[in-house]
Length: 462
Image (cartoon, rainbow, N blue to C red; front, side, top):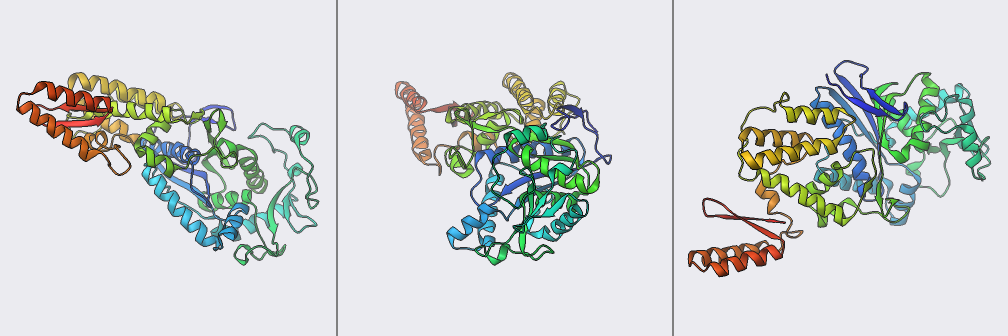
């Protein structure tokens, strides 16, 4: 199939990718907790696994990709109560907003999008099995907890030992736990909570803990063991560590063969997060920047490395993407299929097979653009467009991109077109001084004019 190597967090090294079933890949990624708009950090996570999904498919695999929605959680309940609406109303609205944001960024929909509330019976069955294996118990407060010390492999994903965790633990006010390291599997209902978050169980009315949700959903959709499990680096501990404890505690074998974690988006050297208040929502960023520019900005960094967010970096991404579109402008790609035997395509594939190295893959696009600027070769234009399309880039007509972005709703485009018309009239009247003056004024305003052989003039943002 391919020579793909993936950095496996569990093994702490790059490993050759060998799927459990030849030609098929099963992948589960922990998705959003739906109670607010997605920020760029969320977008970066979904983009990272969009690239994984795209490259696996390009490599010839049949991919079943599940990315869940957490639609029951303390924060969701709190926000719904504050808003005076049902949890279903809140989560449906923000799921719609998330889908709009991901579509704008060119993130392909996963194969499966399970919602936690649809899998409560499977969660309860899993907790019963854990209880039967002495890995779960009900505390005095009614919560059902996981007995961490009864699972020998705890800490293998994060590299944390129980002694390390014990040394760093805080005083736990939850007297229902036998050990402060134990985590909740089933939360006993409180009278103050809405009825829609109360399910019947053998332990009384309650709702699932966060970690058990993913163990139940991935097993129901992909089986007890599958190829790839992914998510943001912040989920490595405790969420993914706890998933392993739950799932492997029941089955006795590995949950996933490869664990993939993407790096953080950082602002002023701090992780972007709602808790720090230093986040930028995807839709606010898209009011200022073209969605493809944002996608390109994210793809220029390797998915495991930190991504530093700033207007300056987005402006630089815009300029770089403009250079690629400018190379394609006026070129006529031929209608042949992508030639993977071509040297540039081979370098692109080698980069993507090396743990999805998009920065190196993007550098191949610039090499092709340089070649295209010299030759205007239809074959080179085709290779540039089709390789870029693997990453979800350069899929618009060049002029559509180059003339976009004057303002959020195209403000200023009419004025620019008017100035271009005035310049054309000046040239026709042989008033070249005025023609040059208009060009210089537009350039000073960041507008580059490109005169075509047929006498027309295109423009783009510098």
